[in-house]
Length: 246
Picture 1 (cartoon, rainbow, N blue to C red):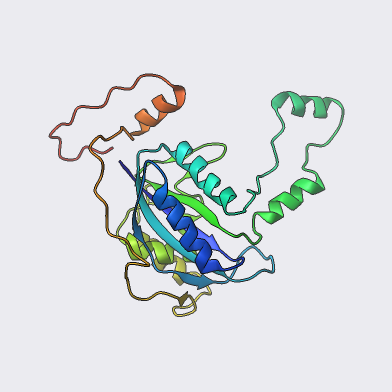
Picture 2: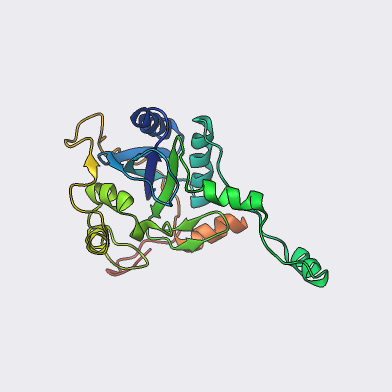
């Protein structure tokens, strides 16, 4: 099974209840085991849009779902909770761009598209983001792993450091604690300004690590590519090489 870290945020309605519901939905999904949950912190919104403060948390799950399958599951949970995903405007195809250039028309987004982009910084009832998926590095149209802004966001690094302080970012090759310390050193956010809403770990805020099911599934980068291309992939044979990486 793969270890995946997910960022959770809410700033509409009963924010704590929204986070609890999202965690419960994750817990009951097939092929997902909810293993660990951070404390919840309260943070000010970013992006220049006037809106309520956020509650933020992180959790770790074990899953047999591939990244694209997990993304679909997370967006399904968001929709179930009343959120409509604000997609970025659709890019013009090469043919459409050439046609526009031949007709002397500029290639630009419409005002409606700009409004959609602005909404990406707006309030939401729930937000579920894949932060890290094993040590995979990938960039697709709808999913970038690790999350492209993970290393920049204290409101993500703070709760993530509670459950994975020594986890190494596969791109920057620094631990989560190191990234957090570095970001705080260059940020106006001071220690203590992030309001910790749940200080002690208990059954309501942190769940025990669950046992993995018997059969594992290949989650190497090659296995992922084979899965996406729908071609056979033979599970690699385990060797005794000490420094072998996945």
